[in-house]
Structures are given as structure tokens and as C-alpha cells.
Length: 128
Image 1 (cartoon, rainbow, N blue to C red):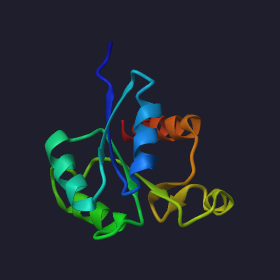
Image 2 (cartoon, rainbow, N blue to C red):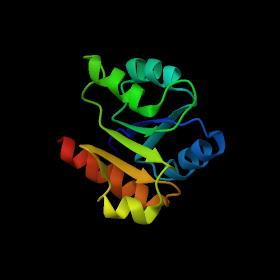
Image 3 (cartoon, one colour):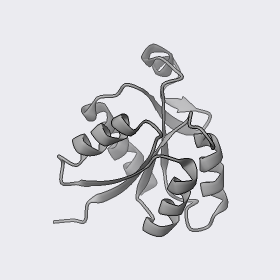
């Protein structure tokens, strides 16, 4: 069996992170590590080098966009794909934007496990 896809989730909403981790890890293809703060997420990204990062946009202390910029500036993390998660947009607004803000992928909260898995798989396929 192949190694599971290592996902780092950086989101300050602890219950949301818990349930995303719980749901994704029911599929043996995924292993999820969580961080509740942007600075902790940056440290984890450098140490575990995940295959993909799920990143909340609105967080106290350091917005997800700042975290993403710092990840891009570091040679150890610059190639890790990021999917932004946000409650700042409604589902219909996200659909109108075709799931992208600029060149970055994003998903509007709340999200189903099925939708998240499809987006993770598509993002990782594009990276190949």
C-alpha cells in the first residue's frame, strides 16, 4: 500500500479542524496534521513537509494569505500546494469564482468530505 497523503490543516476553528481530520482519516489514503495558528503551521510545514496544505484565510495573529506568502518565500515549502478554506464567501459566490482567488484554489465553508476529497485529488494531480 502506498504511503498516505500527508495533509497539514492550518485553521483556528478547533472543532472544524477536528472534524475535517476525523472525516479525512476515515480514508486510509490521508493522514492529517493540524495547527490552530499560522506561525505553528509554518513550523509544521517545514518539519513534516506535507503533500498539501489546507489553509484558513481568516485567522487571528496571521492571516492565511500571510502564511501562504511565507511558505512561498521558503525553498523548503514553496512547492507545497495550498487550498484555502474560507467562511468569508458563501458557496454560491465561490461557485461564481470557479473555486479560485487569483491563481489560488479555495473552498467556501462548510464543505462535505466528498467535495474536499475531490478537490484534494484534483490539486495533487495537477502538481504531478
